[in-house]
Amino acid sequence: MINFLKIIFSALFVFMCYKVIATSLESNLFDEWNFLGSIPWMRATLWDFYANIFIITLWMFYKEKSIILKISIVILFVCLGSIGTLGYILVKLFQLKDGEGVNELLSKA
Image (cartoon, rainbow, N blue to C red):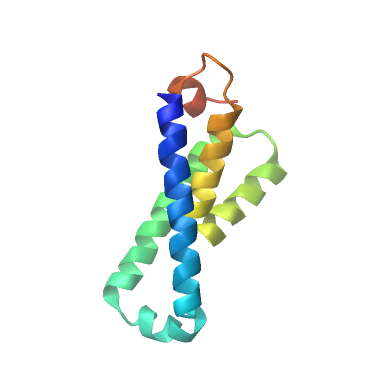
């Protein structure tokens, strides 16, 4: 199961990096911000994003011990979105020892 998760999350990580880079080269977010902010679905998407970040942050705060690490990871989550989240989960997946599974991934370090 852990190897399957590593493959899936690695593929998602690469895909999201590609999408963000390709979109950034095609369109400047800061030039489009006023237009995007006027679209109700864009505002709803941002609220949805931050609600998900809040949930993921609670889990990460449960797992991590260092307050400096916690703050750094929250900044990565907020600034990088799913790329930051996928990166964090991939690090945790690759830190698992042989024989450890999803329970160890989700439980406290």
